Image 1 (cartoon, rainbow over the protein chains, first blue to last red):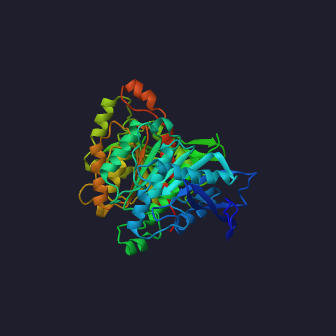
Image 2: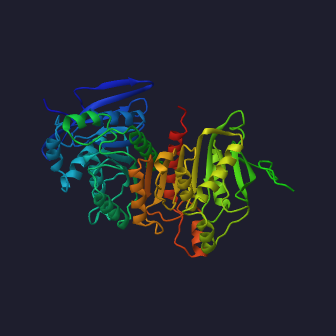
Image 3: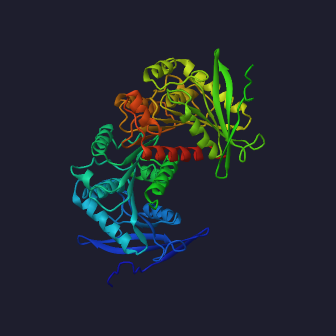
Length: 265
Length: 265
């Protein structure tokens, strides 16, 4: 059976309080790779006649697991149209850091990173529910880096939010192209992100006069926003951890950022 | 005539929209110096029977000018009891950076910095309007540094917010005493705050396991929150400037911070 975008085999309705969140797998394709993303919105708040700001969600290097899907649902509950993108291929996820490194490694430093994310962005718009002038991308870990790359590519984004993402200094020519404002949410004691990496990133931001905010959260390490990080740390043997305060604070900062960038002119 | 604390010669009521902000000069004394602070609250929201969180406001090195008073009024409009403290002496203000440097220079590196701020804190509590378990201090420039010193002294603060303050690394022994969470709002291209100063501050925060957030705002220099900064820059010949986006963002971050630290347990 041919997969049709947005005509999903499965459509779930989550009733939580007064919010009715519709979730929907979305099949799409990029550069010959079959992908499957995850759309979420509140159909009491959003319709094709009553469009809302859109938020693209780029997963951690583990792929499109339940975690980015749960974020898409939270965003939907806030009234946004959220689309958790698939970067790897339909159903491709892993809990093995070696495999995750290989999967994410296809993208770092290559145009494919922004291009694959752009394919997700296009699917978000194809929902027909999004006010195209008010779209942001958020991402976690590898997904945070991907958001940076997507911004640098000149994508029509009002803003991006990187949660514990590796930091990609803006490449030459990016300043003139970038439309997005950047909010970088960083774990202050993240052992995966060196001081040199931070300094290089900040330098490129300041020199390129990017519109950015960089927040360091005390005590937080890599994956600080993921409530499942401690379990993954144990099974995968890597120094990541959930940090409830940093999670709540960075989410609050994202919301303040959205209030700014989605404000109607 | 003897000045009586809280029995003010002058009491102003500002009617703005539905809010009715009461403002009141408050005479007090510290270490033989006669001081005059500025209390502000909304008497429709706050009474001795209906206490509210309190916010101490520490001025820039110019002294207790209209700027910190305007911030106290804004905080009052949000429902807080605000007290803009006097650090220098009743009526002592200046627009001359040399004089301001001398005035502020009495405090840097000395216990007097926290002690004089604590005297203001005590006056805030003496208003009888404040829920003593929910008090924060915010400060601008020199006042931001003073908030840091006040936190390190062990003051009973839920949090402090430093706006474009010089950064004081936590001294030995401060980590065990400090009760306040810290929100540091920093202009990313502030020429008055060196990279070494930032690095030293962050190191002391991380080593002491302080509960802090450090935010860098793109394009912002010293005094970014002060709408009068451009005029002062011209008259005083120093590289400061108002930055509307950084002002609005840091204020939003302060509000999110207050929502966290003032939440009832």
